[in-house]
Image (tube, rainbow, N blue to C red; front, side, top):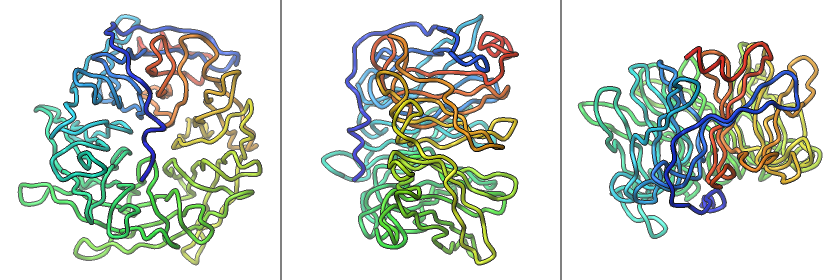
Length: 422
């Protein structure tokens, strides 16, 4: 079972109004700021979440702890008059509605949002608690659970954002349970007036890998699904895989790369992204030349397998180390991501950039550099409609409960300009 406890920090009981704290980075190319500072009270705490934006430019995040019942929240952050105002959209009760949402939410084309919790629900008992749920918050209606994991062949403990295809089917992975106990890839579709879950692949922990990533699955325009596993494979360093749809809603599974570990990349926790040529990019927690993780590229070959190259190996020092994040491209094609550790004096992680022309890494921001700064970003960066990048941290901030952090990669615009643009 994935040790979610490593990513959960203690709660504090306080309530605050959202504020924006701006500060300039050491780099002349970026302006950065704390968008929201979690208190651990009704607004939640331990922001182990990606950031998602609706069409109105409002940011949605989840927290693992806090809320009225201490089991996490779904929050909306609205830019308003030079600040961001926080509203708790849902507070999890630890019961049938789920407990401890990790990873954030995903919007469908109609503006409905979907997410998961690692525990709670009414599907069964897993490790002394519920087995987790998939939830929906409608654009025009309320919150409801659309699937309860049972801990049997369907797996349990989902902790990543769901992916959505062009037919509004949901895809994700549960890291635990399944036929072999090391997780599954699932599809959740709305059919005959109800949501139905189908297991697309049950990992064995052998050559196919085991335990899906913290990041979302990647669904391309053809409906092919790409993902990674944290363990297993020929070298016990994880795998990259592909699921191809066939007739009658069948899928064929294949491993497209076997990670080797040091000095190759090893143990991918973040999800995959693709460029226009179909090359895939991601991060690994271990591996690289120093064993502190890597950024890698997978390039398709005519055989159906992929060739891999390590773009950057982290040292665990000032450049960061042990990334769990899914990468994102900026408008210039450069790669941005976050690391869990390394960076400044506290080793609390960094935002990094990989130049697409040279492959050189640069640190855009080192967390923990101020008393109220965040610590340990896990889920990477999300762009808004204006190209500004946002992430979250599970710790740090004024209350030690994490923050939402924003940055604009261009010196021509400031975070205040970005807020006005909304």
